[in-house]
Image (tube, rainbow, N blue to C red; front, side):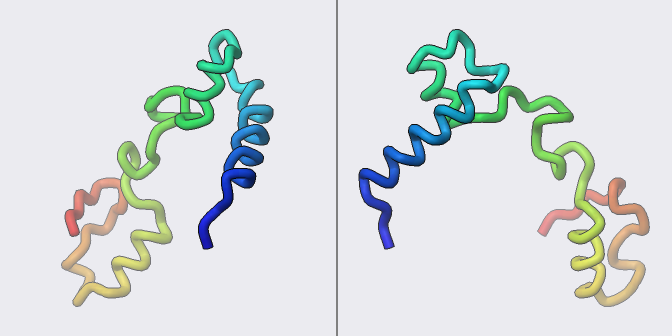
Length: 86
């Protein structure tokens, strides 16, 4: 079911009110709030960015992939050292 224009505007106002208090909201002008609405993450450092890009798979993903391999030799023993491409 598609969202209505009123619902989209409601969520936009709601998120702008919440994200007005973010540190990266700049001067809190309508233009800066619109940018923060679309991209709430302020940077891509090791703390804010994608965890998998910096630290590899988490344990849940590692165990799930290990279940579907042929044996223990197919996947390396330390998940953070693995560089798997699927």
